[in-house]
Length: 180
Image 1 (tube, rainbow, N blue to C red):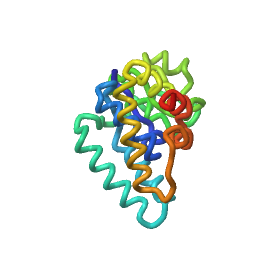
Image 2: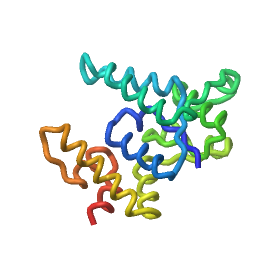
Image 3: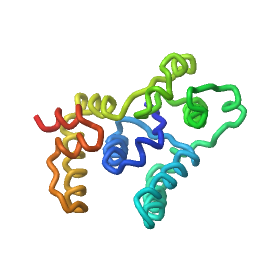
């Protein structure tokens, strides 16, 4: 399964680490465009003066780990598409051009299912997608979550529980499943 990862699921660290960890486990093949990665870098400016530089370093690591994930934008394709938020058309065009199966996003309203279905695509939020992977592979996803938790605790002044970290990362269903 090929999935385009929208900027809004790449920018938050824990969500990104869980999604890309699931990709490393072989659950899906990640896809993105130069523009999606650039939006991630610009969004990281909110973190302060070093936010963008840190994001660009993380982007370089992601690009090295998945050299085939980056797909070019197709302007002709973008010109024929419509979405409620025109700024998201490039994500849909990337998915179509890459023959992706779905778009992973938290912005459901910006990617109406009927429009995606017409293009042969589905939309999933990261919590539902990762929960599905956990149901299929609880051991692998549990190990991944434990690694992400350990890194979060290493980098944070706070000590997180798995469920609390996943809830903060907007992955509450996955967090509840992992905590049981």
